[in-house]
Amino acid sequence: MLLVYLALGGALGTILRYALGGWVHSWAGVAFPWGTLAINVVGSFVLGVTMRASQSLLLAPELRAFITIGLCGAFTTFSTYSYEAFVLMQKGEWTKAGLYAFGSLVIGVLAIAAGFITAARMLRAGG
Image (tube, rainbow, N blue to C red; front, side, top):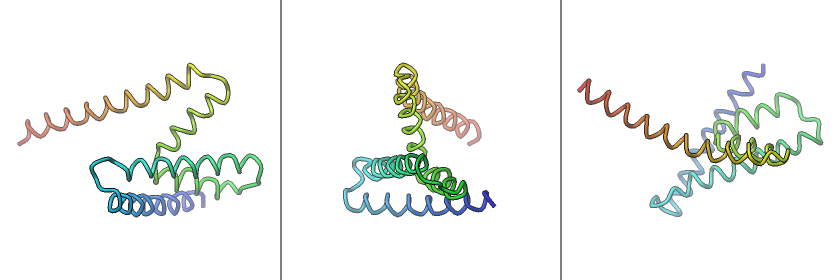
């Protein structure tokens, strides 16, 4: 049954991401990725509220998974990244938090570049 909640949350998160991103871009334009920025901020906020509320309230595991893994996971994985960095800071593990936050950003951008280069080479070789 948990998989059903994850799938439903994922479907809703995907639709909300598409809707919010489109709305923000129609309002603010596409010269800057305002839509993605808004999605990341909203997703991080929702995950923060949910994780804090789950410390005090008895949330059913299915509801927590629906919101955190399904909805927020499909809406933006940036929220998970932000939460994990926050938890490290909350524990006073500032070095780990900095390495995680900076490392994720730099390595993620480098991985995108590597993906672009790999795809370009594959397309060149095959085409």
